[in-house]
Every structure is written in structure tokens, then in C-alpha cells.
Length: 62
Image 1 (cartoon, rainbow, N blue to C red):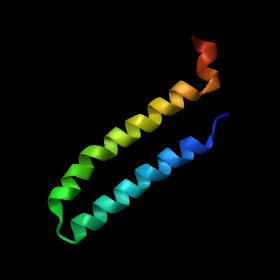
Image 2 (tube, helix red, strand yellow):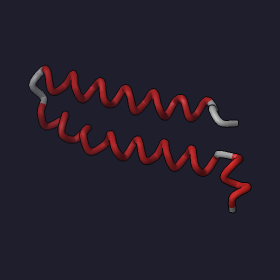
Image 3 (cartoon, helix red, strand yellow):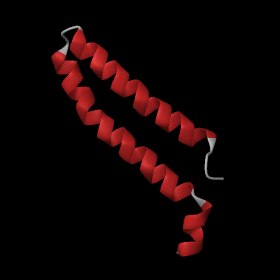
Image 4 (tube, helix red, strand yellow):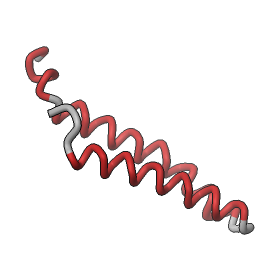
């Protein structure tokens, strides 16, 4: 279906990484915050790829 549990888990993981990055920067760990700034788009890309690959409507378009 459109909203599977893994889709919500990927979205929650992306939000958790963003919250962790902001918390680390506010406590002065700027190097770890910069590493997480690289991981945030990668996590979003992975969630997008998972959504496209598992969406049954995309199978009809192929």
C-alpha cells in the first residue's frame, strides 16, 4: 500500500537524525553536527528510493 510501516520508520529515522543534529550543535559538538548534515540528505534519498521501489502504482507505469 501507499503507507507501509517501513515508510514510517524511514521518515521517523530522518526526523530523529535532524533532531540529533540540532541538539549536538546546540551543545557545541559541531563536527558531529556536520557529519549528520551529510547523513540527512542520504537518509531522505534512501526513504525516497524505498518509496518508489515499493509503490505498487509505479509497477503499472513500467
